[in-house]
Length: 246
Figure (cartoon, helix red, strand yellow):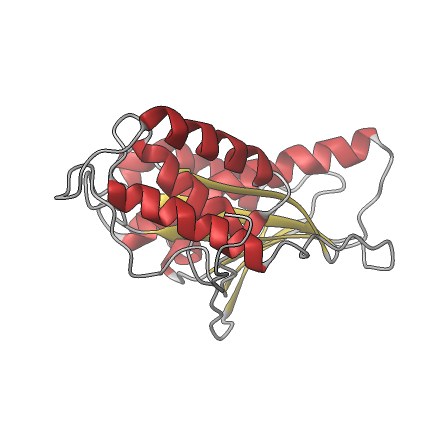
C-alpha cells in the first residue's frame, strides 16, 4: 500500500456495513493485525476514529467488503501522511466539547454511536467514538447519552487540572447538534419520558444544576464537529441554550 492511489476521505458517509453480505470472507488474522495497528494510530489521528471504530466491529468474520474499506482507510492515510495535530501554547485556557451521536446508524442492531472531541483552547486533547450499548428510541435519547459521556470526560479533566493547580478562567461548554437534549434537561414536563435512561439523565441534570464554590457554567448549543463520530465533518447554525452548572 506504500504506492497506492490516495483518497481524500477515510470512509463514505453513506456506507452501511452488515455482518453478513454476499462477498466472501477474508483472512481474519491479517484483518485483525491491520485494525490493531490502526487503533493505536487513532490515539493521535482523531480523523480516523469513527472509521476504525466501525471496522473493528467485524473482526470475528470480516468479508471482502470490510477489507476493501480497510484498504480505503490506508489509502486515506497515504493522502494525509504529512498531517498531524498542531499543539500550541498561544491559546485561551478554556474547555469545550463537540458531542454528537449517529442515531441508529448500525443496520445490524440499530444501536447508535456516540462521539465527542474535547478541546483545551485550540488543542484537541481527548476524543472518542464508541458504540452505545442499548438501542435509542429517538434521536434526542442518543444525543443525550453522548452528552453524558462527554460531560463525564469534562468532569475528569476539570479535576485533573485542579490537581495540577491550573485555574480555568472560563466555564466549559458542550456543543451538540440536537436542540432536544438541552431542552430535556430544562423542561420538567419531559422528565417522565426519560426513565429508561434515568442514570444518564440524572447525571447531566445534577451536573447542570449544581452550584458549588468554583463551579462553572455548562452550555449546550446546537452545533456540530464530526471528526470522531461521523465519516464527514459538518457544521450547523448555532442556537445556544444556557444551562447553569459545573
